[in-house]
Image (cartoon, rainbow, N blue to C red; front, side, top):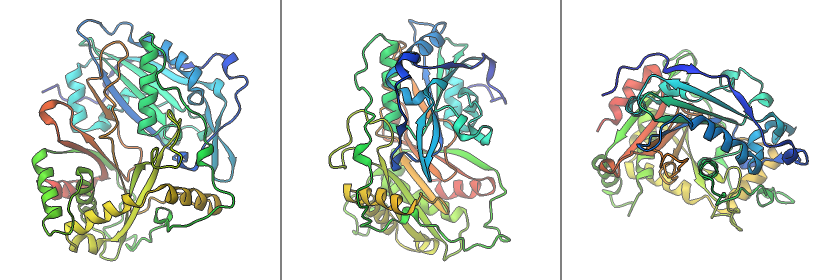
Length: 439
């Protein structure tokens, strides 16, 4: 066990510096347009742990910063700022404003950080420099799209913390950014160059809405503001829950015990289980509708497929809606089936219909009474090497949205098949939720 957590794990933080691509590289660059799939205005914070027996952490900051300046020659939109080009449409420009880089020191060892990762990732926010992005401290056009922090630990290891705009990177793109950064740090050419071509995600002319799009539906609040279901004034707390192979196997068996389903994935059964438990913990009234949204990687689903190295988001949203009473009373297989059917509905045709729906109505995803469940299990976050070997671990820091639930594989061979779930809930409901999911 590591030491008890104290309020601030940073002993010393240097002044943030701006890292920009060379002026001659950006002076001819125009505005970088965003597709509808890119309009996810939030920042994702992650940390990576590195430690090598052969190499100390003395030069870690300089290595990362030098490689970042070279990275931005290719990934120059990451040096820019968001700008509005029309109603409900964003783009990126002002590349000279640069990414932000900072070095820090902490009086902690790697095992202390890993312990915090397993218990409460929100305690790790000091490992990712904020620069006024969160809490509306800065207007949107002034927020950097990439912030990096290298924190040296007393054990000789270090933490690389990254805050990246979701407008420019989903999990797959973020991994390509980090891997390219690492290749440059090791003196290698980038193996997957970014593609900045967004033409395949443009709306059709004329636009055609051919599918229903519940992801845009605003859910009516059936709870009065005076009853116990109003949590708007409460603090949200983030917690980590662990599901081992045995408990996941039990959930799969439960999902298939009535013969309705012939198979289900770990993600599908865990998502259904969390959706049900969350609605119960929030004490939703029986007729309250609740929405489940699942980001689906559509890079290979599109026709033609998105280009290799696509810079931006290659995810579309699968969506289904149910009433709280149905989640509580229907069989578990029914809810798992809702998850499966929603994911199956995401095709090239449905994605293009969604893009056209946004173009016609400027519809945006609605998160009211929603759970946004995403899995990071297929993203190879830890196979990245800046010169200190592959990352020991990677973990999210807090959650981009209160409605988001992240499913993440447990690190280590002894935990193969186990899953970690990150979820945020109003403080008064977290204990109830914990009791519901304990298996």
